[in-house]
Length: 214
Length: 214
DNA sequence: CGAATAGTGTCTCTCAGACACTATTAT
DNA sequence: ATAATAGTGTCTGAGAGACACTATTCG
Image (tube, rainbow over all chains, first blue to last red; front, side, top):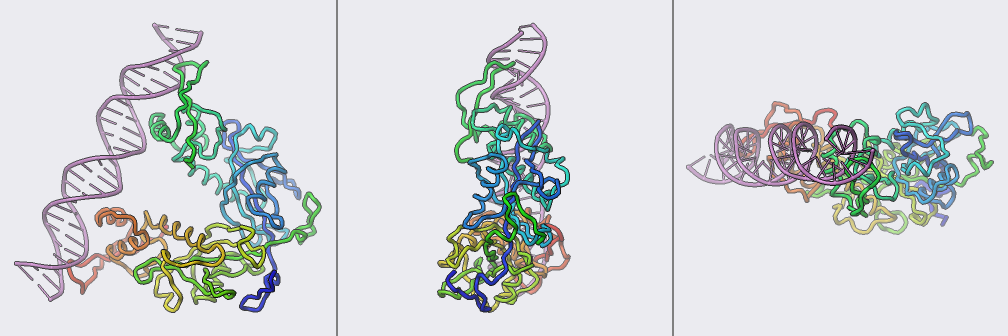
């Protein structure tokens, strides 16, 4: 904008520029399975991840939030950037870079959306299957060591059994006994002092997430 | 390019598009310290990481290779993508997204370049100090568990002592005795059967990297 | 009481880290 | 022999995982 010219004598605006999009894997738990929010592709009826083109003067995270507000009524999210997908033929409309993002939200916030289990999401438009795979791997890695780092349980206190069921859904392959799980997670939680009631068996203690355990 | 219009009626080309740049932290070992390649900024004499604007029809990794070929005569590298930096005010020339990359190369390939220790690189243009910090953290993480994953030792066989010295330079904080280091790394290496000669003390075995230990 | 769930004592196995020892070369 | 470096046997402590036991509630 200042008349700057690079070493080859070209001004900044002389370069053809790509369109930049954001595409987001919105993960949640639905029907006891890790699931992803999909939208119908406007072009050919196939399915894709929600996304949008980056607008002028907009930051990537804001573009993600805008696309999710438009397409799923979500607000107040903190998307995490995964990776840029830049294959030249990834979008037949032209030259489009996509910055893939990940967000996870508690299921109740997605009541009327199209959700599909991540293991059976079917064919997706563009390279969105690859983005989804990356997002799931990242989520599983995040859940391996820490209690519900993405807040899929919502804000209320929870039982260790509820937490363990969540973690097993996120990463089904990990066996591990309940006592091992407890000894790993309990030191990272805050004991609210409350107990659950109205259930069968010994009442379970209720825990809350400690602030700052990523 | 096909006259496609999105739900709001805009064609793909109607959106203002950002310039997209790549900036690369080129890391190496110089004078016994982990060092980074810097170039002089054409505008104000400050220093910056080598980078370039993405050209039309070019993939990010190719833009990185082009910028490094131009500025340091390097070829045949495999850059790794780190993260997109998208702050609106990060470049006073206009709206520029930067995709940060990391590359590591053996020192001999950088003989006539400007190298600075990463701990004392001085002030850098744009947000390049942040990119450098990210790159160093990534390199250190990669070196924590695996023998020279970035090939800083070059192609020839090497001694476990040489490997350990390299790892200590990359991550100076890790103490650890030599036997611990050996027991961690040796199973990931191939014993060439050769030994070093002409040195003081018991001759050391020469190892090579096994193909596919990331 | 029995069923069901919560929570813990404890054993074992593995492994990182440390120490100390042995091995092999040059001078 | 002595210095110097390479390489290994072994002890220890921490921690993951498994098993079995105790604890507390409801019906």
